[in-house]
Image 1 (cartoon, rainbow, N blue to C red):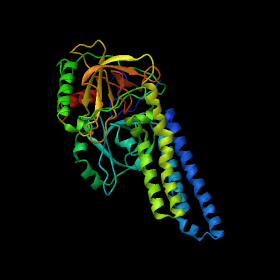
Image 2: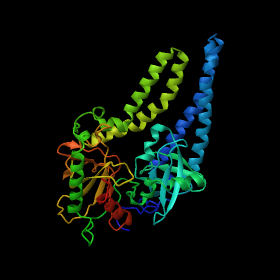
Image 3: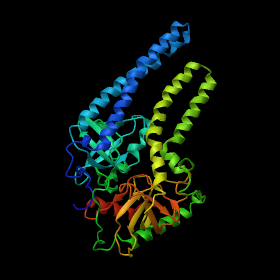
Image 4: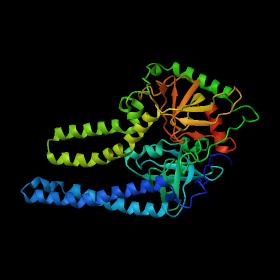
Length: 429
């Protein structure tokens, strides 16, 4: 296979050859160090809180004894996280990352599951339970492709493309796996977009431009006709009538899509809820419990969510943009109908084949998520690729279309790319 595409189920290659272990990727090594620092914080915080609690109890604050469960819970969590971090370190140091298309089932009584399509024909399914917090669950539920390192029998580590966030996962039981593989989003797994080639040093490798297939089906004209048809259906939807503001010069906290992806809105709601419950109950000990529960979400938002939102806002104003023709389509079935920007060369004619795809954040409110997106067909400026070829912010008519994932180049010699484009033309209404 030529270019920078990766066939699903094949080990992603690093610059200078395939990596021997996942820890050779600098982003993965940094993520493991962050995980270990979090573990160290919990391990230290447990005894410290216990000592503080006992001191208050000795000072006749009898109410402090009723809060002993807080340091004990933190200590227990620290022990569990320490065991998990050691296991992830061993797994990441013993094998490479492998890219797989993925699907996520809805959370129910037994929790959510992640399904990976393995093997060249996507006929081997691995059903996993991710061990993560609710605010980190979008890391595995939003990307159409996940990286996997581990043993299908005992478990391993999942990561979104790039390997910058690590999530421990274990396989589910045989009976539950059989039930999950019959769900619609799992049956459509073979039609999901394939992975983008990861780069160790940024900018290593670019996919060449390929001519359109011989049958002329996957062309600019065909995708444009489908995009216009989808746009007409959305116009008839009264919920899509209210536009959303799109400006690349506004601060990131004034942009709905960036606030949502940063986690600030979720953190604000939970903090307000905890404050309201504390005021209602009126006990100081309950306030301490709320702070302990909100702090992990605040730490993740400030360390990961906010920096990414600020980076996207900065890239939207980056100089030296690349000009591309685009077609705005709905994501393939089974993935929630999110917007996808299919990119073509600036001088492409109606028979040209696409060269890249960018999955977008929904800019509108929950009742009208597509509000604020540009026309179905047009010309876009890609800003930010000069600094990082794996990330780009498309700007159309002066307004940014905020990316949900990395810039993904298409190799039409790869079967997954052809299946992805065919599914974009056949997306359900």
